[in-house]
Image (cartoon, rainbow, N blue to C red; front, side, top):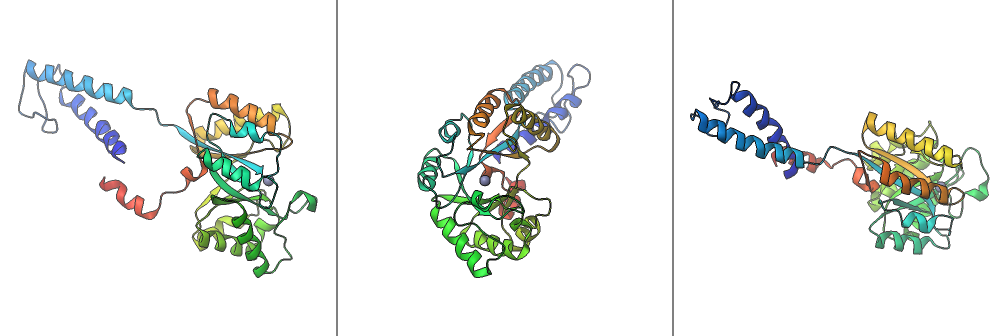
Amino acid sequence: MRIIARLLAATLVAPLLLTAIPDGGHYWTANAEGAGLNGTKNAALYAEKSTALHAEQNAKPPVLSRVAIVIDDFGNKMKGTEEMFRLPVPITAAIMPFLVTTREDAEKAHSLGLDVIVHMPMEPNQGRRSWLGPGALVSTMTDAEVREAVEKAIDSVPHATGMNNHMGSKITADERIMRVVLTVCKERGLFFLDSRTTYKTVVPKVAAQIGVPLLHNDVFLDDVDSASHISRQLAVLKKLTTEQGDCITIGHVGASGLLTSAALRQAASSMEGIRFVRASELLPASAEEKLVLPQS
Ligand SMILES: [Zn+2]
């Protein structure tokens, strides 16, 4: 916040100094420090201050768009797991519950300082039941069964601070079920990241009603398993950052894991104007932070 105050001060003061001395530096206005002085002494003083201000402005980093890379489907020794953990930029590890390396992957991600989120399996409109994995939410469950499944899933992924959906085009459009899911997230202090596998998602509406911090996916990187598709999606991501600023993108370990991790490694060193962050860094500031900001 101090940095923002300094930026504001520098932005406001610099034009005042410039307009205060329109003809070679003879007069200061009342806005400038040293008001009342005149002559060449002022000019020298101005030059000194101006140089200092410019130096400060030049030293400031440019405003960067932030991108959070979320990698889904950890927890099952899938292809690309190690490569994703070795990327030179932070990722958010979305880890499926109840699988062979669920705990191991969560501990590893946490030890690397990465965000860990529960990758909650949820029934899709289409697709085989076997792709869902254990502990999945299906539309025939009662509210109590949904609650129990979500609580157990959270318990099985250590260090989880958020949740997103694995598949789930059917469930994320089901208001009854998502109300239970998001209520549990709220109780456990988790944010929810809507992977947006359906345009009919009710997550934004229900999350707002319950008061769960919400993020959403902007671009799927590897929904088609080919290097050319991934590189096209990275271009889409780059364009989106110039249009809307901060973005979230989702990739996967598994069939595309090696291709996606290689493309991300390349993007990490070549994407200019972007700062890679953990997903939780993109959560909206809390009400208290918004109140404090203008006074600092
Ligand atoms: Zn998934």
